[in-house]
Image 1 (tube, rainbow, N blue to C red):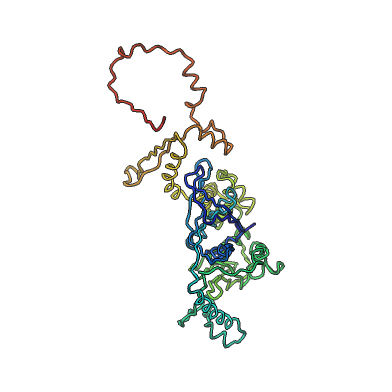
Image 2 (cartoon, helix red, strand yellow):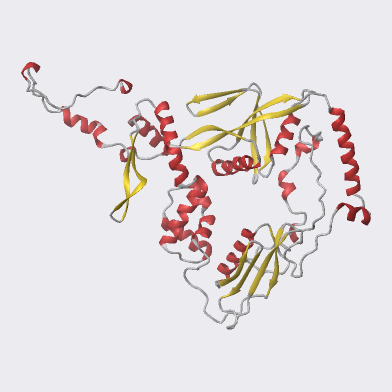
Length: 466
């Protein structure tokens, strides 16, 4: 189900570490339910408390997420990630979206603690006061409305709401007690909740400009979304524009041929009162007299391509660059350069799986885990100096190579990923090479007492490798 996630909750159970797959949660009676990926931490805590049907007031004291991390050979190891604020909550859903093909559910370890009944009457009194405030807010009286809210007029251009200097009324939600959720709310159809009320009018005001013109009054959720819509429009129409003003609260663009046969321009501004971006000026469709762009497009940059090929990269990170070029050509009818397609692939991989900086920082930790989990593994990280021309850069090294995995682990990984193990195992370990050594008769070495004196270093066996 798009936009939702299946949560599996282990309550007051046990955390088992150092298993073959990393961390594992266990408890007597785990339970699961479906939640939207836009859920906040407070909503999650209230939902978890509501699930405790033991007649005792409970609150959540700790939430741990079983975080899947892709390691060598595409294998997954699990670690714990505390869920303590909205940032970690959204990070959890982002990880889920990236790994749901391999890990289709979110596993949480939750600890509860009982709430003392002392002071509950005070809470009820506060709730009564809050109910009185809500009653005033829901009144149809114009006087009550003006007493509760302060008018927020737009400026003369209507771009930015003017903030008033009066004191704001703040209503604090009651987060310490579980909400009394009616039973029917547990059976909500999340798809129906997010579906438009009137599908035939779904695109009015927030239309997709790929198949129609912009209109004044169209609304977008963010600056990024309105700029992306303008980019898509110009790419599909095979025209181009120059940016005349790009500010945190305004985006203003004109056709490259503006004043020379085309008067196309568009201006979008942030409307604080609505908390959205809105098209404020628009001159209608292009009337360019120049020939349409036929090959690559300047607005079809590597970032735009990266956003569009993310599903392909997530499915197959080793996708060929020429396949990306073909995909862009079939989707946008443009032939992008090899370099742009390569850059788009790297950016898309970084968005889906993380960048090389994150991987480099995590490498020593995962290597130590590998040594513990796979007996016989030997880790030797080699680096090379970095040169700027003929001068060595001080304090910076280049990772040269990491070795070495035991053959049985490499073969197992290759079997799991359906790869040819012979490409990854050195010839010296193959039986064909070993037979070459033993097919000849060995010459007896004779009495060791008659051997010539050896002046070289002494070799000492490593007992950990036995």
